[in-house]
Structure formats: structure tokens, C-alpha cells
Length: 194
Ligand SMILES: Cc1cc2nc3c(=O)[nH]c(=O)nc-3n(C[C@H](O)[C@H](O)[C@H](O)COP(=O)(O)O)c2cc1C
Image 1 (cartoon, rainbow, N blue to C red):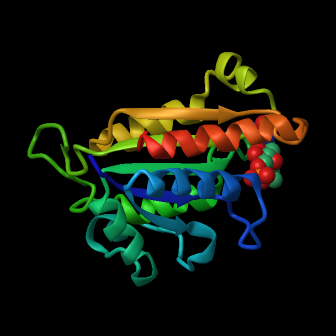
Image 2 (tube, rainbow, N blue to C red):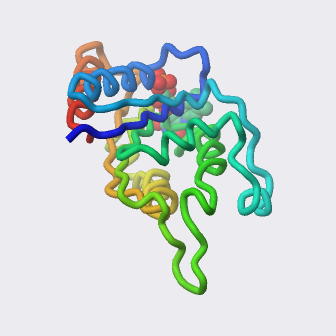
């Protein structure tokens, strides 16, 4: 069944030319070849302020510059986040983006004495994370702590599940054949909207 996929590219460098961009291209190509509808959001190309207060979070609006991104996320069946690991977690730009768009009333609703209502239920996600260290080290020594937090505290909290992940390590050290394998793997994941 054809799905609506949104690819959120979280590399903070607007100049592009990074592995993250190539992975996003491959995922998008594979998905479109299989008949899925793909929308792409490059966070680095969007101008927006950081959220500064709980009052703004609860009562303010998604900034105009992020409204198309917010609408694309709401319309999607499957959300793919692609970003480099920076200081052990997602780059601040990605966190700033999520704080702006995952607001109450849009992503979740405060319950009356109960658990918050998950307004994004029914969507799935994949996290694709590149890193300088070996991926097994991040997974086994650090417990992939930032990804667990993103999965449980952000994505599951608003109803997005399952959340799958692809961790690509040693990115500066690997040879071309390994990179080609990663690109091919992204194309195949895109084809399966996975
Ligand atoms: C500010 C910054 C912080 C980084 N922190 C980490 C880190 O904590 N762990 C790690 O394994 N790699 C770290 N790296 C390396 C990046 O994860 C790596 O360069 C990136 O995944 C490469 O992908 P790209 O070619 O798409 O930029 C860091 C890089 C930068 C620029």
C-alpha cells in the first residue's frame, strides 16, 4: 500500500554535501520508485527561533516558517529522521525543531487527570543516525541513550510507534564500498516505507 512519507533531514549545515543528504536522497528515491509519496524537510534551510517559555509552548503557535513542516508531519504515515550524532545526541537544531512542532494541541493533548492523549498515533518512524564512533560502541557502551530518549520521551509520547533505527558508525573512516552499502540499504528501506 502506498504510504505518505516525510523525510526530516536534521544535518545543521545548510551547505549540504554530507552523508546525511546522500542517505536522504537514496531513501527518497527508493520510496518514490515503489510508489510512495515523499515530502522532504531540510531543517537547516528553515529559519525559526528557539522556544523560550512554557507559555509559548502551550499557548503560542508553530512559527510560520515551520507550518509546512508541521502539516507534512501531521499528514504522514511514516516519518524518517536523518541526523548526525553531535555530542552524543541529536544536533540542537533538531531538538529546537521538535520543540516548536510537537506542541500541545498538535502532537498531544493534556488529559484531565490522566495520561496525555497521543495525537500522532498511527504513524511510524525511523531514526537514521550517523556518527564518528563505531555504532556498536554507541549502542552497547552508551546504551544509545539519546535515541532511547527520543523514542520514548518524544516519539512514543505523541503516539509514534514503532520507531526503528539505523545507526551508521565510523563514518569518517569507512571505505567507499561500505558507504555504497549504506546507500543501497537506504534505498531498500525507502522501497518498503520502513
Ligand atoms: C559538533 C559535533 C559533535 C560531534 N559529536 C559526536 C559524538 O558525540 N559522537 C560521535 O560518534 N561523533 C560525533 N561527531 C561526529 C559526527 O557524528 C560525524 O561527523 C557525522 O555523523 C558525519 O556525518 P555527515 O558527513 O553527514 O556530517 C560530532 C561532530 C560534530 C561536528
